[in-house]
Length: 105
Image (cartoon, rainbow, N blue to C red; front, top):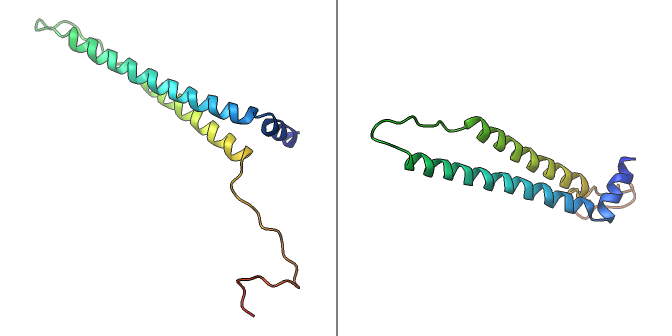
C-alpha cells in the first residue's frame, strides 16, 4: 500500500506539488513573523514617551511557536522529498565470475 501511494505521488506529480506547498508555507510563516516583528518594533518606538507610558512586551511565545512550525514544515518537506526521490543508487550485486574494474588481479 505504501509503494502504491509512493507511485501515485510520483506519477501524478502530487508529491512535488506537496513539497512545494510545504516549503512555501514555511516561507509564508517566516515572512509573516518578520513583518509582525518589524511592525512591533516600529510601534514600540513610536509609542515611546518621556512620561514613561507602559510598554507592551514582545510576544516571544508566538515567535518560538512560528519558528517551530516553520521548521516542521521544512522537515516534513525534506522527509517527503527523500522518500519520493531517493539519492542513493544501490549497485547491482556482481557474480563471482566477473571482475570489478577497480579490483587488482
